[in-house]
Length: 145
Image (cartoon, rainbow, N blue to C red; front, side, top):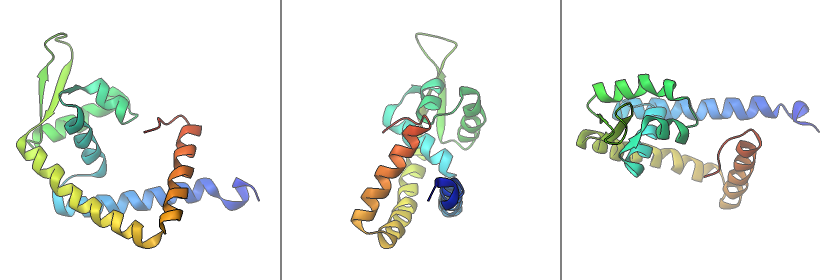
């Protein structure tokens, strides 16, 4: 059978979409954040302060696509933006205490999602799926992590 016969693209895309929608629903209810915002905040927390370019690169997005998200997170009081000391054209982003609290709360939500995955797949199946998805991401230009 081929990828076309198995409808692999459709299955991967709709599975990812369903997972993201469920995670967004749970996160919005518990933290008023989306998965994309939570991912951005987690990256910021692990590397702060960092530039918008570094954040965009880590999320595999264009820097211009980050502008709206950064403004929303800043308006919610979750991050701060300050001019870089070495290059005044560049913004440095860091989490606020409120942002750290929101990120901590989001981990509880992801724990529920991961528990559902643990229940649905054996350890061997999870390992195989992780390897397959990593290979798929690399095949189409995604960075390995």
